[in-house]
View 1 (cartoon, rainbow, N blue to C red):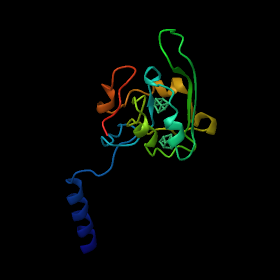
View 2: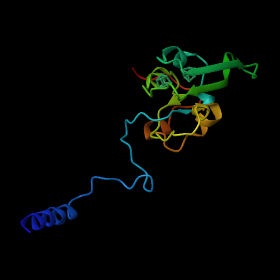
View 3: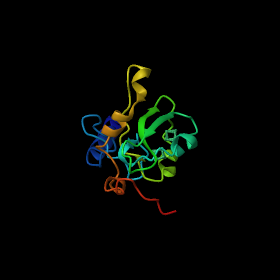
Amino acid sequence: MKGLIKGLGVTLKTMTQKKVTYAYPDVPLQMPDRFRGIQHFEPDKCIVCNMCAKVCPTECITLTGKPNPDPDKKGKIIDTYDINFEICILCDLCTEVCPTEAIVMTNHFELSAYSRDELFKDMKWLTDNNTLVRKENNSALPKGGAKKDV
Ligand code: SF4
Ligand code: SF4
């Protein structure tokens, strides 16, 4: 009897305390501002410098460029840009090194899939992944970009 009363006491006390669990996935999780989530890519800002692919420790970025169709502009524009999320470790190095912020981290973390093939994301998917871009990246730089302060 003593144990029952003690147990009920613990239950009543806990009922009034703040919940430490989340109703996920019914209620979306709010991730911290500096969370390193799945990248968003903006093709118009990419200058095809290849820095992100070179710095990537798992070599999961593949990209190709093509000549700029505008004869008045030099350089290349991006043609294909893919990330293999089977091996991406979301280390943030690609976004840190990008001089134009064409690639930025988001707060999006849901990538579960039934097939490994679905973890291979192309430029369209990465461009459309724009709903949880960090505020600091959302306003972002003008198209064509400018160098980050270091
Ligand atoms: S987050 Fe890291 S592992 Fe993933 S693509 Fe960028 S550099 Fe590569
Ligand atoms: S995403 Fe950034 S770092 Fe990668 S090729 Fe484009 S401009 Fe260069």
